[in-house]
Length: 215
Image (cartoon, rainbow, N blue to C red):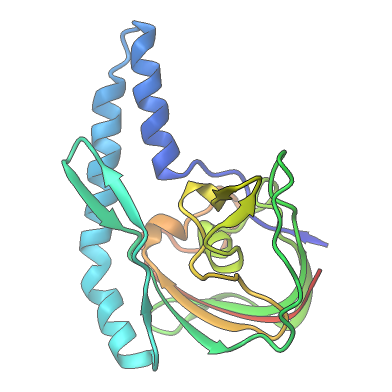
């Protein structure tokens, strides 16, 4: 089994944490740090937008724009995640259900093929034969792109809609057996905390997933 998703702190959570810490009365400029993080976030999206849109126009057949909204309160604006995706093949088996247990998301085990490439089509990571992965985002070295690609936009639990990483997945139902899926993402969502990762920093990346089975 291979684990995915080493702990990363989502931008929205970081901003909330900075705000909460400001009430402690220490000398650290949490507000300044939060403002700097918002500026960095916004700058990355702006600097990579044209290249991503050009790639989508040239390489995607039926692109879908991710419209998930992220609030940047210190900059007085809202932005989207900057991601585009394309469903290359619908699931051949739609029976798997993503679930939330109250203590967290129920983690699926997936057999899949995947590749990660730069906009120049250089493959930087792949599994062409089909490995088995435990999609536990608390314990591995893959990025938020995996999280947003696999999990559905929201999951119903006790009358509420629960979203993975507070922002939610890209699609209504998430990836299932037979799904073939391609997504392009700005680097804000592609970087990992794994020291051995082959994922390059500060570059938009294209991910392709082919789900052989999920349970």
